[in-house]
Amino acid sequence: MVTDREQQDVLLELLNSTPVVNGVVQDQLADPQAARSWQQIHGGSGTVEELSSLAEARDALQDVVRGKWSATSLASLLEGVISRPHVSPAGVSWEVDVPAERRLAVEAVMAWSAVQQTMPGRLRPCANPECRRFLIDRSKANRARWCSMAVCGNRMKARRHHQRTRDAVAE
Image 1 (cartoon, rainbow, N blue to C red):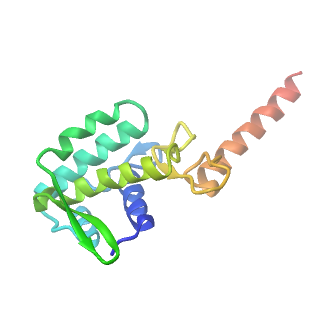
Image 2 (cartoon, one colour):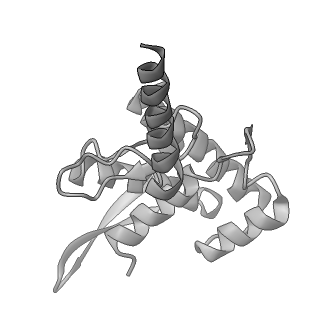
């Protein structure tokens, strides 16, 4: 059984598959061999159709998390999906019936929804305007701003320090 944390990690990995490297946006799913490997590692088949629906879901989710699109824009990704209850001694769980080529995409949307419901406001874009990555803030204070303190956080703090030093010299 996949845990909530594992679902969140896969969602974050998918959202972060278009990083900026040396000032250029990279699509880590654009290379067919790398994409097939990603899909298979996450339980997919590795087909072109599956990749197409996964990339569509990723792009839509990125725009929703960035606030460019409303959450209702994700509805088309869930068309034809059926959810059925499964009762066991542990309680009720829901099994999703979706065509195989859309399963990873649907799971990404469902993981996003679970984060929205259980951790509202904690999935967000990195505060570095030059970064395209996302973070899930799991801290108690909910004050994380950067995808990585070692990379973006350090860069942003260094820029602020440099600006303060330059402003102090100019005065």
